[in-house]
Image 1 (cartoon, one colour):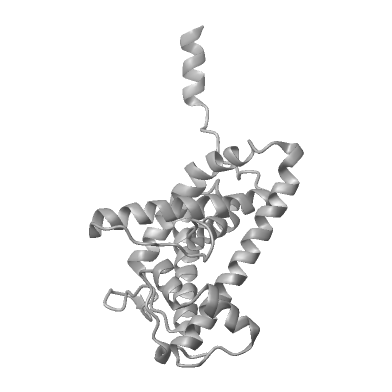
Image 2: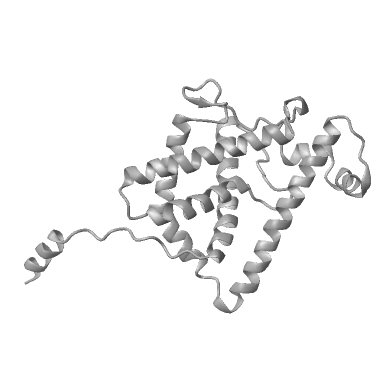
Length: 233
């Protein structure tokens, strides 16, 4: 009887991967979680490669690199509905999502602030240096691993937040993300103006010049160099 049951189970079609039940509050916490994990991973990797610790932060407040959190959210939104599709489909979809995201992020930094955060200009099939076919393929593989293996585990981790405090905690987390994003963009804008030779004018620019001045920004965003001449805004 046991042998017959085992044969039947082996002959049965493998259960398809169904999309994970993801709601808005999951996305908020996935953004924060992956922003933190991504920052830690990049910091350690840069130490292994360069032999010294560098600040890889992406927000002016907190140990977060939002590009990883945003990538996780985008992969979740666009790839999770395709989770039951064959792996090659997921890889192609992930390559399109990741490649477009990297292109737009690279374009925005250069257009707005004259920052070349990365460049693939010398790589085959490069798209204005902001991304290239090989890196897009890497994004596709990462996106597939995320949605097939990591997403269910990350969602299960988020589900451990007690339901009776889930709503207020998520509201606070979302408020922090919005405030930190706005503060970071304003800090970059004021840094750009000062780097361009413009003296701080008005309360906002003076505030950021005082509390998020050049020395703070250079130390916080240690691997970023700003060339205002490259900006096209």
